[in-house]
Image (cartoon, rainbow, N blue to C red; front, side, top):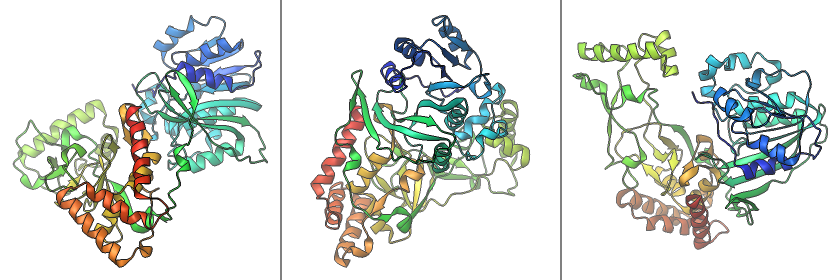
Length: 485
């Protein structure tokens, strides 16, 4: 079972404990102590009155005997109700998306149960599990008590981010906001996070503007990041929403069943369509030569052949027995046609959900379906002009700064990251330059000549305050830093 455990590097744990006021007799709580990094850091800092919770019985048994003077419990923090409040709480909460919370129901944790608790009032239904942990921690602090917490730096970009922050500032004030990247965790995991130091205040009337700080963990040391990338201002004014909209490609819910169906002879060819599943299958900047998969897509009301009925019955038995994938299982209980899929309009410009080396937008020139490893961008302006606005170093640089960095140089882009892009005002571009941009875009689609990207950038640079080589070097530097992380 995935408990969202990502263990904090000892250097980071020591740094976080150092952010607490140094009062050794304070009541300190670690709500999910895992491998004990924060417990050890508290011990080294001289804290005597330390409490801890850990839901994982195996981890609890491995750690509890190392700290005989601490009051450690094998319990779920979200159901933990101590008699007294705490002076300080320090934690790295579990990283579990809101869609996966109900997978913990066997442990007594579900969204329905959590939302019955009044302390979570105001927390959006799309809140990830770490948000529940933070709100619970604030509830267990004394007035003016301190919470030091580390969690994903994309917190304000998520759909639930703004309402979550509003809830935080209604109960606390933010004293420190520290963005940190590098080898933060003991396993490969997200490497861009934020550390917040929150002071509980039942009536926080004074809203303080906190200047973000930036640190990087390299070679076992925390160093201040000099010349943080946000200081490189692009002066682009037009939001993505003016020129395009975006959505994810088709989600099957159960790729084993729907992608390249095997094991049963399928004679119903009208139920098989082509789909591109992976960015690796796309060569160049169009879908014309991409490798395709077969997708089982049965229209609603379709009369099933015996072979097709046998195939569906086979997977229905697996679904009924394992009760997962959960979304499809719930659908099967509500509809006899649970196996049907809704087609997604894939005619547009595609972009990969994950990026490692090459940043590129791809034109769907073959009228083929995209799986959910892609985003589909629907232009509101000329599609080739939009293609040029996307395939240039101004856009690539923005995506490098916006995306969430993972281990081994991987960059993850969410839909809301794409929607944060900004562009040159098309109305300010001369007709001659628009025609050049369109021609370069068509050339890129047809021949995949990457010099077109430089040429597109050169034209757009005329309408910004940045020179072509300036933005190119900035992009290459930030990309290099990600790949070397």
